[in-house]
Amino acid sequence: MLLRQIERFLRQTDMPSTKFGRLAAHDPRFVFDLRNGRIPRDGTAARVEAFMSTYLTGEQESCHAQ
Image (tube, rainbow, N blue to C red):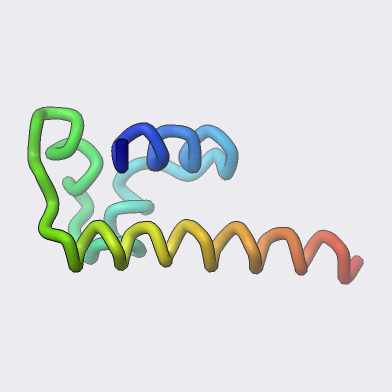
């Protein structure tokens, strides 16, 4: 489920997976490892979900401010 959310986020934002991994999980291989079966800890998954939510909210606010 988390990987599906991340893949959607990457398409929406046109962000490279390595950049996402560095920003969201402090691991540039994070998305690659998830695609290969890695199961993140609950805290990591929560941090990644919070990052995506915050990033998208900030992106929407910057669009409305212009």
